[in-house]
Amino acid sequence: MKRCANCKSLMPADAPKCIKCGFASATPSAPSPAPAPSPAPATRPAVAPLPSFAPGERPGRIRSAWLLAKQSWRVLMLDKQLLVFPLLSGIACLLVLASFAAGVIAAGHFQGEKGDTTAWVLAFIYYFVNYFVIVFFNSALVACAMVRFQGGSPTVADGLRAAGARLPQILAWVLLASTVGIALRAIQERLEFIGRIVIGLVGAAWTIATYFIVPVLVVEKLGPFDAVKRSAELMKETWGESLASHVGIGAATGLIGFLGVLLIGIASVALAVATSNMGVMVAGGVAIAAFLVLAALVSSALSTIVLSALYLYAAEKKAPQAFDGVAQFAFAPK
Image (tube, rainbow, N blue to C red; front, side, top):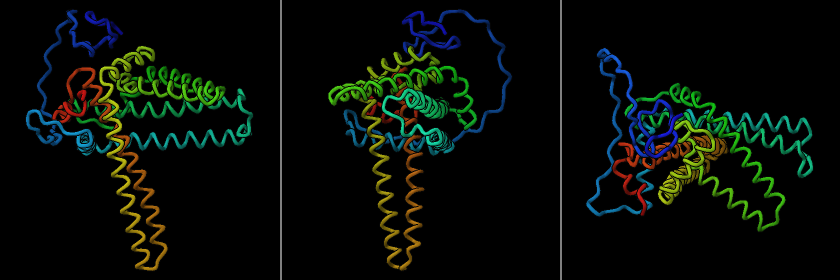
């Protein structure tokens, strides 16, 4: 790690310029031989442009959220393998839950008294392992999104390799987050109603302050405390637009998910009545479950793509090319 000579911010030792202020180091470096010419790589289709707006025209928050979701979907369609990361994360989280539940039941701690030390230790270990799984695969997805924004064609292996390279930072952050989470929960259980509300607000503030933590870990490779500070700085600069974008994407994908479930349900009931076959209802239930899983995977991927784009916008004051047409409306302060 080194510090920027201009703003004193931490950045990786091999970074050519400060990601916060853009200051380029004046340290001379040995010239490297010119690389041999190589065949131009095969180009992949660019992300389709967004609609243009007349000077002074500003779409409302609902339309901005829809445009964000639509453009994130286009990015995802160029790299459909990004869905692998939330899928692997979900499967791993289910396995972690199942293994811990089986262990707790076998040990008889599911009937432990309130405040039991063993129960708290198990809760901490579960929180740590589960959160590590989530952060690791989110880091892999963010790394792939960054490659795509730079014009590359990321693969699943690229994402996993990038997340593995940040393993020390991820482990350190997960340890800090697990400690804070368990501490807040322990304090909350020992307080009265008003105290619980206060601690709940503290937890919400912590969640907001660490909104950019995964992109910061992936791009800037900071330790846990510096990463929290950096994330809070970025959130302070993009407070309203960050929350609006996050809520907007969730609302857009949630609406599409609701309409999909509604249509499948209506079609299943209609077919079951028309054919007098209850097997159609069972098939409809399976279809709804599969659709909900797919919707959750897509929603997670879209949210992470938008998070990565917003991070670049906050850190470099420039949106990725894929979001050029909507960034000034969706990300800029209203």
